[in-house]
Image 1 (cartoon, rainbow, N blue to C red):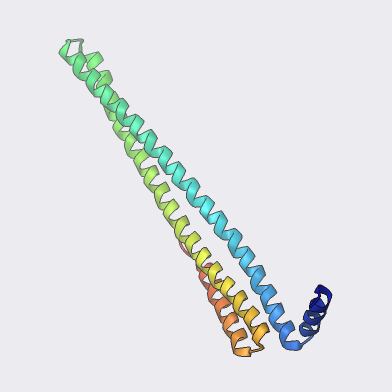
Image 2 (image 1 turned 90 degrees about the horizontal axis):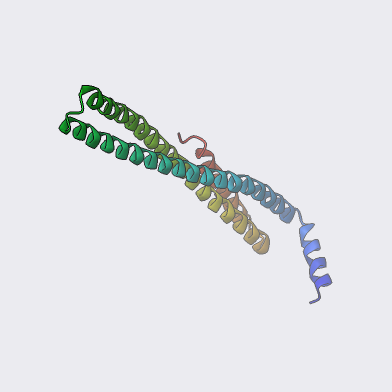
Length: 173
């Protein structure tokens, strides 16, 4: 069969009311799937950025920990050398300051890790929703090929489930 004959045959089939309804359903599902796909990618990017920020915070925490340890050593050395209370107190104050800063940095790193986890959960829901939407398109295609309404209904049900799951990605905090 030539390409022109095949196109003509498909055009004739597309004129049937059932096929047009299913094709319209497929177009709507595809549009929703495109939106969900983009949202899923944005959420994955957000997850990765928050992971990187958390990693940066943990590196900063380690740097402060090293500085604290060096101040601890310096304080002990000053005390051992009898350098006087001013020198010892300077490094003792550094210890307190570094302890406080480390606590703040640690809290920020944990907050960013949690945000990354939430973004990951949201992205996963969007991707699962996208899978159900894709299944809906496949089932709608089968409905056109087999001319069976139950297959079309199942495709719409799959698409609704997918859209519902994807919508819950917005509700996760």
